[in-house]
Image 1 (cartoon, rainbow, N blue to C red):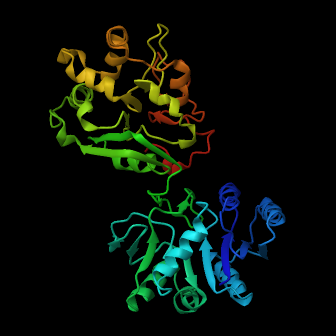
Image 2 (cartoon, rainbow, N blue to C red):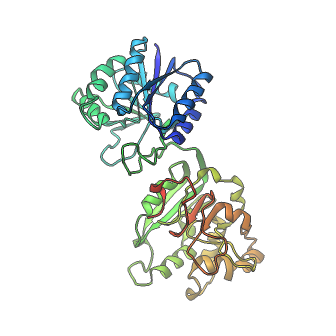
Length: 422
């Protein structure tokens, strides 16, 4: 068996760099790795590809004189691979990254289907494409996303090549052709491919991620949020899970909150977060999110944060009670349990983060040993920006793990537009 990996490329060099970085870490290399530079206007793309080819002697770069579209570029690369004797073909978009066992996983799964079923390492989660059967290391579905597939040369000629030039969504048409032959797709679980192209080359603005592809596993943290009147909490939860697997995820409806249907929703929310949050998670810590408060930079996470009982963005006070905002916050089970048992007057619960971090901070520290994070830690954890007169840290995002507020300025960051608050 001779294996080829084919990757069409058109501009978007930042995504390409990440793709190449992941490919350089493969535990098993294909026999040939073909990049089809589809007339990129960014001259640095060709330079980057040539540099990568110099590092790996299996790399071949095909350069097209002008942009001809992903289907044509993919066909060029796959046809070249077959002509060079490759009988197992893998395609990958250049705005995707892979796990080190990417090649091995796909080949094993192809064998699991007796070579009859096309395989994908990209497990997207969509209602229109439900899991048909779930097994230990894979599931079967009726549709596979064109970001990645693995197929034999025979399958290429039967199901893939005939779709090129006949449909914008070649992957959808290929799936329909497989279904016509009563063939389902084998999809790796967990995913070994992740889509990082938040800015689509085809103009798509939807978020298409594999939620089971994670860079970071936080078994001691539960992701928690309430789907309240502002909505969009599911979007915040999805973005927060893009690169992180949590010990648990608990997104509840506002109807679970006493007083949700009254005009004092902010007060009802504060009472719930003060008195009931402890009963919403079983891990050592909970990460609270809101529609305008969620994770945007997983790389910033520090395991040492779990030694604190409360971390939230700083506000701007100068009295050593400046940590912090509760919309995006990390809290310990210890703290939440203590708060649930304290006899706190109902009129002294809102805003709950203000009272926890300022009104009751001395008592929580002195009587219960609660540890609030330092301002340095809090400033790495999150940024809050409402334009408040007490806020002194500015509203320019500078790489924090997360954020709170629609007035955070992301203009100087590389956070893609469709991950920003709406």
